[in-house]
Image (cartoon, rainbow, N blue to C red; front, side):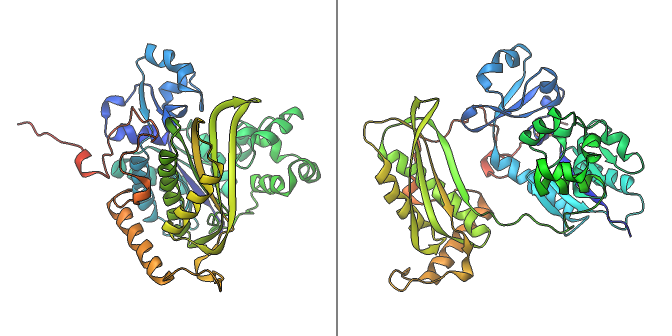
Length: 418
């Protein structure tokens, strides 16, 4: 039986999440900003029609948004993550082995479904009814075709199946919109007259292999209907984990920077444990608020750990020692971050004869308890003292909506009238 994939893509996801709990946003230009309210990271269709570009600095387009009475929101990650979880739970009811590709996308297998397009419309309607989030669904014989179909679905009523008319539809899709074609390869292709997905599909294998490598050749084969990515290809574990943020204001004080770093280490360590890994290498980077030679000046310090670990207190201690090596009194800083590398499965950690955690099993139990409580009751339910309680350095989010689904004191309020 022919294998068939579906790619479910939430439309303008961050904006859609805001609209679920605020119906007055319907039909109004809406944008969502990045960390510290810097750049545009999500746009409603109405905002796109105003010419607002993805990634555009907010200050550059602020006058346009104000002139058209657009609504502007800071990123509300707690809300977006919870709404994503709800969408994925609905999809899991259709395919328990679904592959979550990103916060707003997931692959499903439609193998054995008699009428895939009709089935997909049922999925789309159910997600909208149960979560309020609109989605587009692309269907194809490979994951790359499904991704291409999802792009086309946004302008074809929400569902698109690449079947007998595949070539006609691929001829309307820009080559830059093909999954796996980055901006570098896109410019190479367009210089050689390859403008659409159909043009890319028709290229000779040798030409593609020479200019786009074997990865690009796999993309071309997928466009031709040959599945090169298995149905259950889950995203592999990360090889490095980084957590870094701009400060909400410039910072001079070592204590404030140490607090911020401890918070970022804790978040990165939680991700580390989430993939069942331990870190053997840690790097701390600190960026000054001074522009030199066309870029901000940064410093970094790193070290290899005596024994790979995912124990947050130890990682905070090591990061603090590295920070002291690169901090210079009297200077002004705008960003700090941490990177874990040398990741290894936690159960395969090579013990060190001379440096051992006092009680590694106790540490593991403690971390599991902390992670469970924070997952159950919300991020920062339990925090590390090193991260502080009052955090004047935290990033600006002056336009953030309420966390409607994850905070008791911010739940929606319904009023009944009789």
